[in-house]
Structures are given as structure tokens and as C-alpha cells.
Length: 239
Ligand SMILES: C[S@@+](CC[C@H](N)C(=O)[O-])C[C@H]1O[C@@H](n2cnc3c(N)ncnc32)[C@H](O)[C@@H]1O
Image 1 (tube, helix red, strand yellow):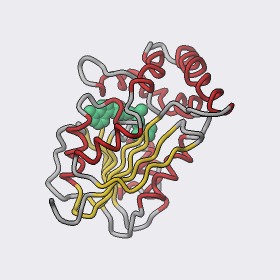
Image 2 (cartoon, rainbow, N blue to C red):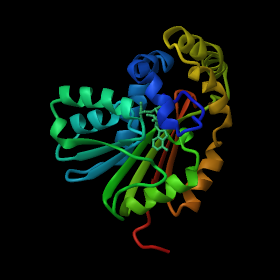
Image 3 (cartoon, protein in one colour):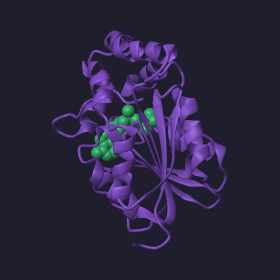
Image 4 (tube, rainbow, N blue to C red):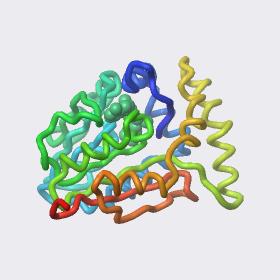
């Protein structure tokens, strides 16, 4: 679950500070829903045997582990600028039965170190909000995807309508920063609400995907809109 505004020195540095507690905070803040949201993301991405998957903003590597455990014959590269998030991720990967199919690397979504058309699928869960230049990151994702390749993005959102939506808004507004303050010695969690409010609406983010040269295939609100799943595809042929 995303938790932050950007650090002045690059957002990875801020995540270094909370890396050891990230998984626990994530589970509590999302009321345990983050795992089911990631699972839905994997399902919607239609990953096939033999596929190479790039997980951007991989953090502590929950997605690479889930993808390789669910799908045989799939290799995942997880990328993140936070060395300490990756350290926690590497410990988890080492305990996974599928460790040899996962590689974790340092990097920035805005300037990927991979050749054009290196991946069949890309994922980014609760990461795009931390990237200063989202358009650049989306252009990079398009570049490293094979023609016809797909990307899935999960991002938190403000639930809009109904009683449950109102309760979810209260949780995000007051519960999450309080839990964060309690469990973390750092102040980052207080920014969660502001960063959710400041993030693109579904329409604006779809527009970004389209401007990056991707075809939006799916937008799906999850848990009354507390989270939104986007799936987009690189066209088979360049326009
Ligand atoms: C809220 S965590 C999400 C981690 C993981 N995807 C998950 O589902 O739990 C956001 C991650 O985005 C990473 N991040 C921040 N800026 C980034 C950038 N420019 N490129 C790639 N990842 C970035 C942070 O280091 C952090 O690990």
C-alpha cells in the first residue's frame, strides 16, 4: 500500500526509512486487502508460461513472489530505488520456493536500464504515485514491453459513494496516519491521505496511459473504489 509523498532526494530514500516495518503497516493499513488486490492484478494481466515480467516499485517483493508461486515457467525482475526495501525483499525471496526465477535490482521507473521490448508483462502496485514524472515512467514501461505486451497498475484511490465508501474514507483519513504514527518512528504516513487526494482521477490516469502510447483495456475499482486496477497494452504495431 502506498504511503507517501516524494522525498526530496528521490522517493526510494524515504522508503529506506520504513522498510523493516513496511509489510506489517501495509497489511494493517489495507485491512489485509492488499494481497487480494495484488492477486486480482495478476489474474487480470493474463501472464502466460515463458513470460518475462517486470515488477516496478517492487518494494519488499510481494508481487514477484506471488507471481512465481502462482505461475510456472515465468521469470520476474523486481525493480526499486530503495536498497533497504530490496534487502527485505531479498530475505523473503530467499525463503520462497521459487527464488531462482526472481531477480531484484535497484533502479528508477523513469529511466529503466533494460533494452527495448525486453518484457512480456509489467506490473506496478502502489508505486506510480511516488514517481515524480509519471509520464516518463509510462513511456519507459511502453518501451520495455514487447509489442502486444501488457502492463497492470494498482493504485489507491478515494472511495466515492455509499456508507462503506464513507467508512473507508474515514479509515484512510484518520486510521491509517494514526496506525503509521504508532508503529513507525517516521512521519511519512501522515502524507498518505494527501497523496491519495492528489493522485490522478481514473480519467486523468487513463489519459496518461493513452498519451504514453498504451491502449487501456481495463479499469476496475476494487473494494468500493479504495483501490483501482488499470490494465493497458502496447499496440502490436507502432502508430
Ligand atoms: C508503497 S511501496 C509499494 C511496494 C510494492 N509494490 C507493494 O505492492 O507493496 C512503493 C515503492 O515505490 C518505490 N519507488 C519510489 N520511487 C520510485 C521510482 N522512481 N521508480 C520505481 N520505484 C519507486 C519505493 O521505493 C517503494 O518501494
